[in-house]
Image (cartoon, rainbow, N blue to C red; front, top):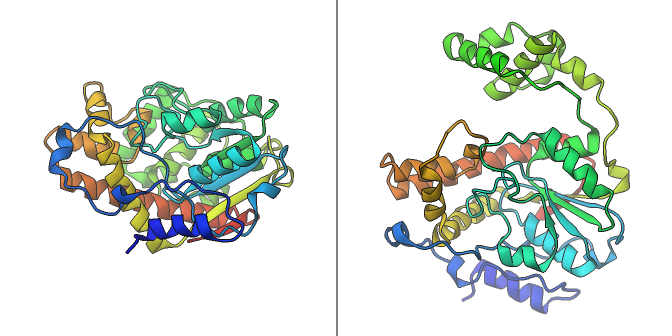
Length: 347
C-alpha cells in the first residue's frame, strides 16, 4: 500500500492536467527514523522541500509570465515546491521571503532549498547573511526593490507574514533603535515585567499591538522611547507599498491543521536524517542564543541536546512542538492580514 505521499505522486503523474510536480518525499518519509544512529550521521545536501499536493484551483501555465507571484503559507505547507514548479514551468527567479532562510549558517534546519534545487532555477536572498548580523524587514525590502527592477519575473515565497505584508502594504520608516535604548527596555522587562513597558505606550499603539507578546510590546516601547512618537503614529504615515496586490498574483496556502502537523513532524525527521545534528554541531562553538540566527526553530533544541541538556528524542519533540506553534501563529497572521490573497486549501 502506498503512503499518502506516494499516492499524491501517483495522482500528480496520472491525473488530468498534471504539471509533473516533483515527488520529493519518497519512502524515507514514511517512518520516524531511529534516532541513535543520527549522532554521527554526515549531512546530506539533498533534503528537499515537501511537494504541494494537487489539485490546484488553476493551471500554473496560465500565470502571466511578466507578473510577480507571491506565495505565502505555513511552515512545511509546500511553498517552495510550488515556487519551483512555477519557475520551471514559466520562468522566473525565486526570491526568499523567510526571515531565517537568509542566514548562511543554517540550511537544513531552516529548510532552505538544497544546492540541487538552487541549481535548477535562479534563487535570490537565500543564505547570504552571516548568522550574527541583524537583518530586518527593512533590509529585506531594499534588496527586493532591486530584484523587482530586474528582467526576470520574481516568485517571492516565504512564511514570514511581516515581510510579505510590508511588501504589499508598505512599511513605516521608523529609525533604528539605539543599542542603549534596547538594553534599557530589556532590563525593564526583566526586572519589572511587561506591564512596565505597556504603561509607557499611547492608547492608539496599545489598541494595535498584541499586549501579551513581549517582543511586540518591547518593540513598541523602543520606538516610543527612542523617537518620542508612538508606533501607531509611525504606522499611520506608512509610504506606498513596493508591490501592490493589484500588480501581482498573491497566493496563500491554507493547510489543514492535522495534515500540516503530520508533515511538520515527518519533515523534521528528514532533517535529522539529512544531517541537522552536524549542522548544529558546526554552530555549537560560537552559539549565542541572542544572535539573530538563533531564532531558527530546531536550532536551540539541537544545541541543547549537544550540550547534554536534552536527549535527542526530547530535542526532536521540542522542535516539532515549536514548529507546530509557529504554524499556528502563521495561520493567524494570514487569516487577519491576507484576506485579499487567493487562498488555496490543502490538502
